[in-house]
Length: 380
Image 1: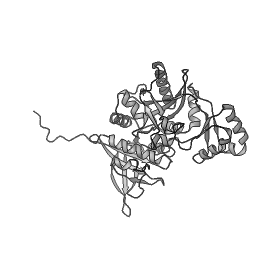
Image 2: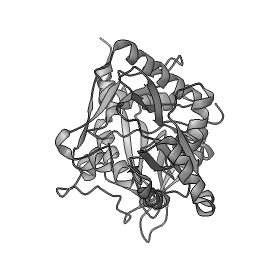
Image 3: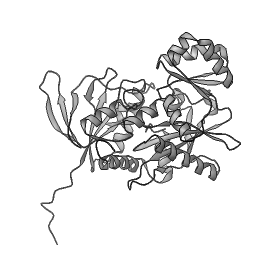
Image 4: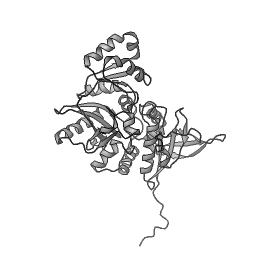
């Protein structure tokens, strides 16, 4: 029998898990990070948690998943900006991790093989940090610069989806200058859609800054809320009577067509008091849930999966995405939006849908890391 006494274990890939960030979705990103850190196989990967504070400071964070849980009072976790500052030094296919303790000389602590950015919203999910990784020549999980930017901006997202022939509900994009100089025209455009409508920041997520408007007298206040998050906003016709259906998409390891999950449905708890799936229902009070699989006809489920894959490809996405739809009782299906870095919290639909499709949480995270490790740096 051959001796294995001198054999060395295979090198673990070093994964920089980046989370937090400067957007209003900072806390949601931290929740996601805790669950992902918990799921990464320590025998295959070495995790380096890097938190970005709300001020933009990069620091070494804790590897303890419980550090990123909701508090007993329901408060979201946040990155602690006091700690060793971190930087990525450029490489080719990998980057050196440089750490500086307060008052000490910077030191290199090794290479990073792949970055897993779990950032939601602007300055993280919108192509900005993806551009940084591209310039550093480091592999990373998820969509590239263009797909991230277009997927974050509902204005251009809808332009691409319309060009791909995907069905969309009526909507209008409004720049701040239009609102400031001709509010009557904006109100007239909204009236032509018919109330109720939703007013949303054009570049945001987690339902932050979104208001459901029932009548024209409430429109100005809703626009004010949206503009607190983004000077550009979008107004969409409400999908009255429709069900909210989601579908997960990931790239295949063999480079063939993207894989789609069994669809799930977002359902509001009747006693919650929520009239739509807002931030509190998603993350705070459990007012909504994801039912997986969605109880819809098989042909509708197949149509949704086909639309989800086409949406993924039309933006040139990589890695993963969640695609959201409206399904009406008469069989109509409309695409709502795509999320190129969906949440991985315990109540998030994306991992639940993949678990129902046959890929559990840990296997899903491993699949995404393997995709990133295999892809080239630079233009693809």
